[in-house]
Image 1 (cartoon, rainbow, N blue to C red):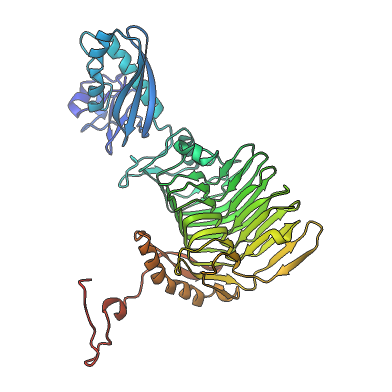
Image 2 (cartoon, rainbow, N blue to C red):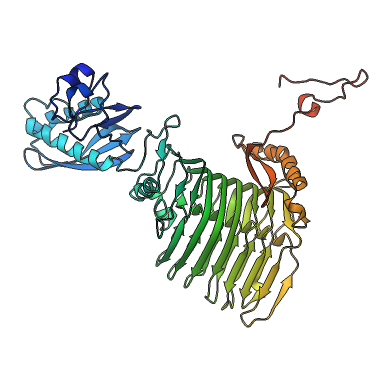
Length: 546
């Protein structure tokens, strides 16, 4: 039985062989090993010999043996503590059971099974305690985190590849971490893992929302290196560091280096991206993420293939800000009627999705050699796009091998641009006029096309400018992008997303990239005053408290 240490006086009264526990950072933590000496406990805190146990939030079912047979209970953990206990089934005599259930409140209040049994219903009481303890064993964090309680102020901490791997299993098993916070406290090298198990269920996202990450994952500007996935799937699959992100999920401040994803599917839809295969409709967010490496996808039977350097597909209301990719993409679909979406940020982005302050420079290759009546959508930023797009640029070279070249939509920014959201919904877009765009038929016949912003667009409401690649890797271009941020911020504010902080751009050895520094606008007289030049004849004018 697990027992909480209330204070040092009580601890000193316990024998060395007893099992003791305490509270760390507001989370119930217990010692599951013997304490060597009573003197090792001071001020209500267990010694270093005590093994900490952290409970993960969720609902857990436990079984105990009562007076007449099995007692099954549901135990709910919130903020690392027991928040409720519910009866699922039992065979106890009604009289004794009605007395014993008073124990539920006592256990919840104590956040422990170390409570007195109900007089006159002892055996039923012991069965209840056993069932709760059985559930708590399932809720224990078995090496997932280095510490923390999951709050914003005290996030769960991950320091090692083993902990990150166990975190993935935890989400697979139904811990969504909704409303909770997880942080990296060190760089993590996944090089010893032959094929990474994506965090969360890989299957169809809408059918598995109870096994998808739904909290906040903050890399704290650390790197995850050598993420490798090599798998063949026989059902719909979404793959990346995460499988799919649920609609409250946030992934931010992480650098994914040397990604190596090579996946195929011989039965159904396949989506792949370095961060995630999919973002569920409703508002998942990816912010301040850089990716480098290679992604290869192969869809053998079903037509649908979504491949993006950051994420395979972004559903309605998904938000990607401050993202940068240098990823070589190869998407292959040898069926007769392929539907291939490939992009340097995402394969496809749905209604009201946002991509802002983003760039891609990796090569994109698409192969549909048996295409007879299908469509390909290929873009330096997105294959197909139906949302808001601001302050982005692409240097991507694009190549396609396709039996039906005319069914392909290629754009250096977007392959197929859906209807706009108004005059200001797609602005500050840049692409390389000297990027290579090569289309080749399955028989080897082909052509080199002129680079253009969009393969096709519904209403032509999108402002794009072309520049030479060399000019787009200069300090002057970085300054131009930074000069756009103030206007872009005003567009974002109108959508109710004023909490977004944009990163600044800087010219580095490998081109114009996002800096670690937050963008800060230069405060000028135009920002301070309503009007005026500051002269006697034309004084500065103030109209508001702001």
